[in-house]
Length: 302
Image 1: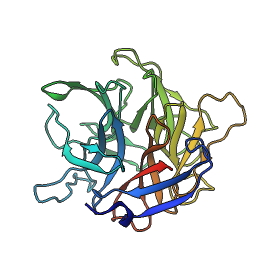
Image 2: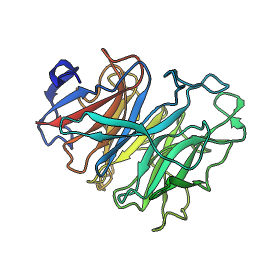
Image 3: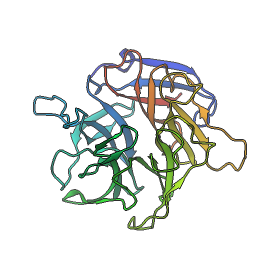
Image 4: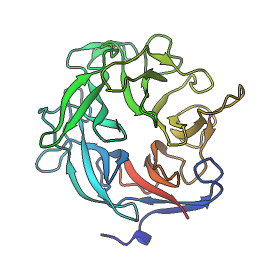
């Protein structure tokens, strides 16, 4: 493994909520390659992340529409944020189906992830029929791995539903969709979740203080109930930037705040994840001096 100081480092003064006015360092992970690595989430002593489904020779697999197919991997994090012992997750459902951008219940028993409908639907943005995105729920069973795969009941095959994110108390599921009423290409929505993760409330669009006329993707809610998401709205630093919004605040004039460098860059920055300590976490980026695809970075206060 390369020494951490040989990796790409960024240091600067931060002014947004998780940093508490401290310096932040961002480190490119050693596992990155020309393939995609993104959407890292830590659950206990395990980090889950999304990566290309590959052939035995390590080549990325594509579907009939020339889109990449993804799957979930696990790894063991060490103190400097690097990930070791990388391997695909164990699951009972077989086949080359998309599995990416996941969120997990606090006890690690339930996982919600982005996949595709098996049947074609109308993609209103592209004016054609495609296998639109959906959200599935899976349950972890000892000795079996991930099993009991279920598509969430509100996922209409004529629309996209993706990037699930559970609230800290597990009672609300945030996600993106392009259903009727969406202001941009995709907006942020939420539903209530029952205690046993078996039923869901009505789909509710987040208000216009959060959603814009552009694209909102990859929501995440931290332990202090701050919503983080990525958007390509006007006024950003690059293509996609990461924004924060305090869900505890009742202020009528609150607006999403663009995170400072080095979290945001001139490239695409997305899929922000903050550990419960509110000082360390992971983000995904296509920034200068990356490995060519979506790369994973670890950040920490010091």
